[in-house]
Image (cartoon, rainbow, N blue to C red; front, top):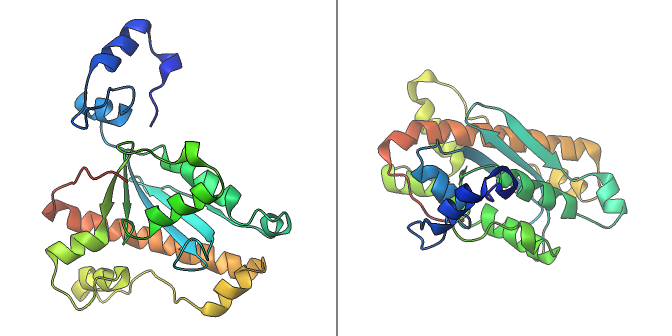
Length: 226
């Protein structure tokens, strides 16, 4: 989050500028660190994306979802109009970056190695450099890494973690099945396919938050930057 310069007095700006965080930056540069030092609660968001490929130079972002700690979900998805205008995922990447800036910490699953690098890659491809979070702007937590450290299970996939955590309740994970037909049809702007992908994305982010809420008491919160 950028420091709200316009809302601060000259004295406040000078005070925040003179303060240094553990990364060696001023409070104006790392405003989230300044807020944390003042005892303001950390704003945590849960992020998941759906893509057409595992690599950003061959794939695009179909959709993204971010859920806040209160359960409210914000999302965006590529449209047929985006395809017609040859913008592909440019608009979706931009809205994702704008929403990410509202949080101090973003939680994902395998996000350290996939979601965040993919978003950054697509943003740089579209020339959206100014919107990409800089080092220290936002910290991250990866539930895949949490599970790898805290649990001993056959697979650290998100749905497998959810299945373990549901335990004796007999419930089922929220995820829907990945059907390649929908992902391929989405590349043509098929609305039914895109709706299916968005529903899958929303279920993913809900399951992500559920897993995090169950595991967070057993892990130390890292301060690793995006």
